[in-house]
Image (cartoon, rainbow, N blue to C red; front, top):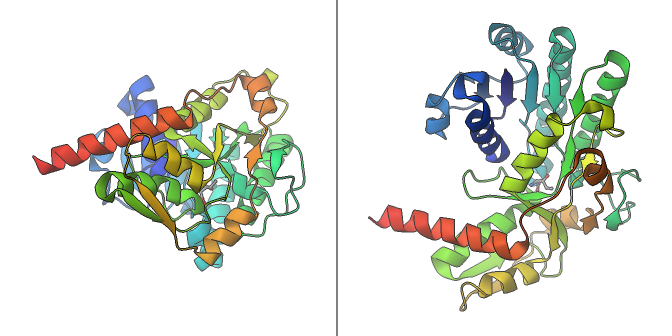
Length: 318
Ligand code: VAH
């Protein structure tokens, strides 16, 4: 059975849906510190409103449901974390080491996302290598590098089956992201459909790795189901899919919504974080060791995002 922490968040909610679709609701237990969103998920199978730092409560869930795999997705994202660094450290690292201890005690495998945020200004920005310098300058990135090191430590020292990927910015339309630097690439689609214009908080020439949610979900699950004997890396695999700037994304949107315009009001905090991250990673290790291959490109994602948001707006108008 599977436990997902942060299961009502942007990534958690969609991994939860896909895992329940594949294995049945009763085999996928959800937990989150809140229970005021995504009630269809909450009512669709076992759900616990619990703070994932409460080790006793999480251990009780693991015992009760005979959990053998934990997708640990609870975290504060980069921009939010920069506003409250101690809270971000406590949640991102505190909950992870607590989860790893539980995994060690009960023999669970653990998936923990890392991020392009785990790299810093000293890292090569173009075709960022799998094994390279990691000196991030955001507290989020520091918590992600620490997470990678902790997960590798529990694998080498206690044989805990830990695996992770360095996610690009994730673009989706089911659950809003929780305060990330890449959130512009989600907001822009809603603003394009609703107002045909968008004021972007990042400079127009800011390149970042991005991934569409369906590819992010399949990457996490494929990695967790990969043959462990093929894995030479563990925490965490570079995962590349697309790399674009706000200017380029605006051009793709304009191809679907001709009158769309973009202007810029740079947020210095998010711009500084984005400037410290890579432009585009290389992901040969993921492709070679467990067959990673993205399905969506920017044009296909744009078409799917706009069609989905328009459909929702029409339903809301009825
Ligand atoms: C953020 N979306 O912007 C998250 C992610 C790669 C970026 O970590 O913080």
